[in-house]
Image (tube, rainbow over all chains, first blue to last red; front, side, top):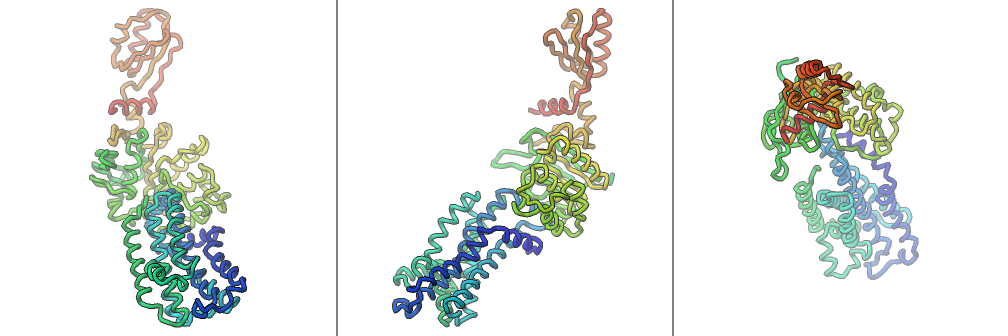
Length: 244
Length: 303
């Protein structure tokens, strides 16, 4: 990790209004919109006494990292490769991995900031309780971010051009959003579906976050699924990644 | 000149998909010289210097930069070698100033970027983003980045491509200044004028091999017809007489005009021949061949 490269990438990230909106602002905005619907603030027997807004907080928490890691980061990295930016860095004493790791730190930090923003706004505006098992929640959140970044790295590795990265990113994006519970929150999914979704990175993440929010330990199975995905995807990304 | 060359390339080979792009290239660049690599497109020039920069791993042969292996000792080599690559960009929204500061931070003993920016005429572009720069400005920024680490040797690949004639001349002056400050320069080019003006020695590369390695004057002298004589004779000249001229390499007749190439000896013999026949040579022109002619000649032989 090179701090000069990281500083430059952080500064460049701040110059991307699209990324800033979709990663940092949109998840919380979505939460606010949903929270403004009166019906979503009623306690539902189907949701185990929770309100719809309660179950959408983990979705909003996961949304920023999915957009950042699967859409923005692969576009950047394939662009850096396509336009010889990685090559130019290879001709310096610093390896081009410095750019890769800087991008991951930037998008990881943005995902974390986006998640915290959703939690805080949920708490202040809609009285959504903060996670009771705070340590478990943070652990699940960090593991989810790592899995998301590893998945983004695989998309970057497999995409030869920014166009392909966009296409693959979107193709992976929607299933991942589904698993995270954007359309049907994971706790409202039918049993079989929930079990299958629980083995996907964001399905496992959603369940782990839900459990920790309710005050339980996030569950070793869910955390294990996240770790397994991260390891598998990281191995794949480092095997398939091409510098030019 | 020092005893050990700054850059040493020995029997370098590199193939892509079974096709040998660099096929046994050897040369050595001495401290303080401007060494040119000249060749037609696709001759293997860029691949050769990419092996010198450590961006590619040779299939066979040896490359040393200040005695170090550019692949195994990449970091040390990158500290003493500044590179301007043929096709590379920077992050679109990075400003000139940020790029200079960023790249300065990657080296242990960087040059002061402000005077460097001034020398390259980038001072009024410091807050401009990379994507908004013109081709010439981008090129100048990359030259600045090649020099920012205070290198002992710079490798410049197609340095003046995309520059207008004035900017090209300014850049040549800059390269001469860089050399005067003690930096060794390896220059890849396909501009003859540039090679002739700047280089102390030139390796002509064709089809992955070194076709010739000499000073620019040496290359011109060694090429077959280094002097070109053309004239329109007042009376017809006998073919036999012309073909019998000493050191003659070619004869061409075009609309009554004769163009011969050979050496100074040929010139003297032609004049004697004309005088003897009382023939006047109208519009007599005698010119030295240029590096252009030498280049075409050299790369034709190996074709």
